[in-house]
Image 1 (cartoon, rainbow, N blue to C red):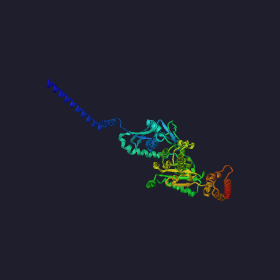
Image 2 (tube, one colour):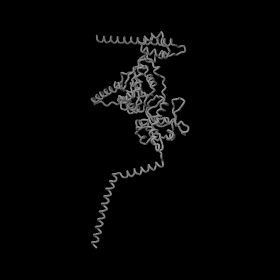
Image 3 (cartoon, rainbow, N blue to C red):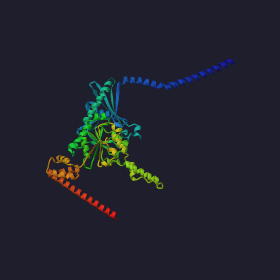
Image 4 (cartoon, rainbow, N blue to C red):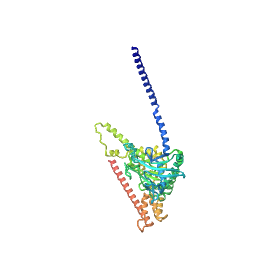
Length: 516
């Protein structure tokens, strides 16, 4: 009896040991299987079979073209090309599109049409391949709608728009290899045909769009219709030809810039007194090249990062303008001001008994306003980001070139310096031809002599040559110009005499002080 009980106990112990060993072995094996991620392997295998089964039920493939790429940093060129390509299909009555978007076209009596959301249009390629384009949009993601807006968040808060292309799997090679490149080529050609030149300005702060949503771009625009051309620009013909040749060389210089390893851009500095035609020169350049104009108001740009985004969202074939750059921001004296502030800070440190003075009103205004720095502007002109895209011209204008930091206007940044000076005789003859239709007159010699002694802007000369009454003609207008030039000469002589008298009086006072 005792032997039987002992055997039973021993058997129980052996069973416990076996179960323990089995549990340990299972734990080791299970951990090993987990490390091999067997469940992922099984999941992928099942998903593969599920896709094959879905292909039997749904034989269509899709390609999605998003409006923005690069984290919504820039509007996609492919999206705009698809939109332009679909304009033809959208206008076809047989397409069955019921809801359209309309934008002004190059023809003032026409519109450029595109599909509204949830509309679909079919397209047939080479007579046998049918595809379908669907336009749709989605609201911004929660992480976009929160505090992490990208560079101000305008694009992040706008709806995310897409075009979705659907086609049969049997046409995969034709659609991906031939049809999509065809769409992009035809879209670019349509954009050129429908293109309207535009004048852009940067938006300040957060802005609402026309549809009630957040504006998706930092730029707002109007159609550019300035009439000024080089044919009507008052300038010495030789200087004008030099500028036009330079613009031609830039426009045709894509291969050259690539060969020498430079970004395809060029800087122009227009400097001279007010009224000498700097703004009209920009208009003439845009009309000559058929470029858009992006006019940047620096005081509306909050940070260097915002300035960089402005540049990224410009397109090729454009002129980027900052007018009166010496007045836009304090980009001229920051280095000197920094030295002064450092010296003032050192003085305050030595005077420990004095309490720290509160910030001045000017300093508070600086904190609240634009934080664009000279370094940011320099990087904007020729930093790494300036190579994003090509065929851009950057133009600065100033009335006081001597006030600008040399680093801002050196060659390589502002490649060509153009002085817009007072009206010379050659420019006057051009204006007389344009405004009065004459090439010669007996008063020309008097005008030539007076222009040597008097500084008068082309704008003032043009104003005097403009007929203002029914009886005005070349004789009366030229006589009025001569009268104004003589008056300006007399005023100049009088001012010079006063200055000489003042200087003589000061010298006399200094002499009396020396005698004492």
